[in-house]
Length: 408
Image (tube, rainbow, N blue to C red; front, side, top):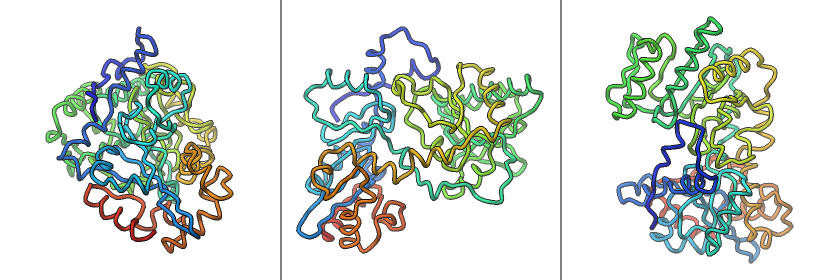
């Protein structure tokens, strides 16, 4: 990583800019979380997600595919991976990655105008651009509605209270709802920070969190008249395998960010059949005409105001039959679709997979080769009924690489 990063803070709290779209794209692409994972102290936090492992069947070798937020670090540390895998860089943001070594970039959204601009600006970069991100890899079988739960929550959120999440706009929205519709919404909110405490009397203690987060929660508390617990039931942390129980109780899921990554929360909510609410301005510069969710998956808030947010929440929770989030999600997203879409952008597989027809997960040669090499169905691999799909940390990545080297 040889490029300095700059957090594009001017776009985080307002949907308006006087800059040209090209300048805005440059500003957004000026930041990537990749840079932080190049540091030695982050080596145990690096993800290595294998979408397709290398295969060797009937005399034919096929490279696998992995994605990571630290492709350069991985390839520098374990050079042999280049011979076994095609690499995909993930910025963990709505920016294009900065990796110098990756074969492919996750670009989050299909935005032809931005892609054309990028190609002209960096004609020397022979990299495949793929309009996906790690959020699209949500497990639709793990994140699914649970029978037996009543829809007793108006809103469930699970997202950090960092400043760019605009949690104060959320607070203003639920206060505006109370004023206009005469009701206090029932809200659960998990912030994913174990340092906070949920005391026995229901008090939310966030005094151990970092200062910028405390400031956001102090501001939220002020907006809510000094009584957080009256409006929001905060959870410091909910285990991932328990989230579906909370989603299953919710009438909607709300995200107030204007600029971030593709956001796993809104994907998981839809997968659990919960309609999502995002601002129309969410990632608008990166998205172009690409949707944040698919038809009948939720609603866009038309303006970045508390009143518009309140009205949109009311529309969703009072018209539950207007939305089919899980049905819509499964049509376009989920792991199987993610893998088929990702592979379809990489010409290597079109040239090298026998009888390839655009659906790698249904390909007979792939499934025969997979079982021959690994003695499990490809389906089980995709949905993590094993430990071959994902590991974290350079040493663990080396171990998984060594395993794949012996298997083929």
